[in-house]
Length: 87
Image (cartoon, rainbow, N blue to C red; front, top):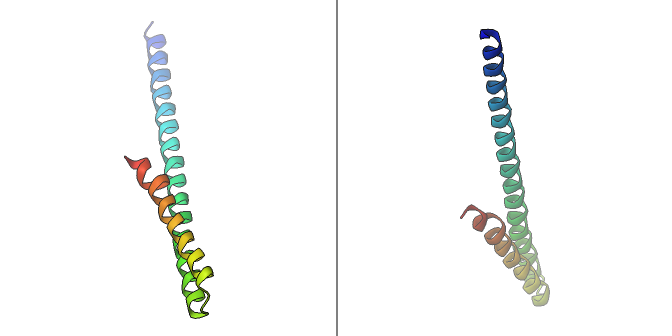
C-alpha cells in the first residue's frame, strides 16, 4: 500500500513538472513573438526615416512622403501589435 502511494505521489510530481515546463515554454514563445514584432516595427520606422531622408536630399518630395508614411505605419504597427498586447 505504501509503495502504491509513493508511486502515485511521484506521478503527481511528474505531472506538475510537465505542466510547469509547458507553461514556461508557452511564455517563452510569446516573448519571442513579441520581440520579433518589436524588431519588425522598429525596422519599419528606421527604414521609413532613411527613405525620407534620402529622398529629401534628392529633392523628391513624393518619395519622401512615402517614406514618412512607411515610418508612420511602423509606429502604428508597434502600437497595435506590441504595446496594446501588453494591456
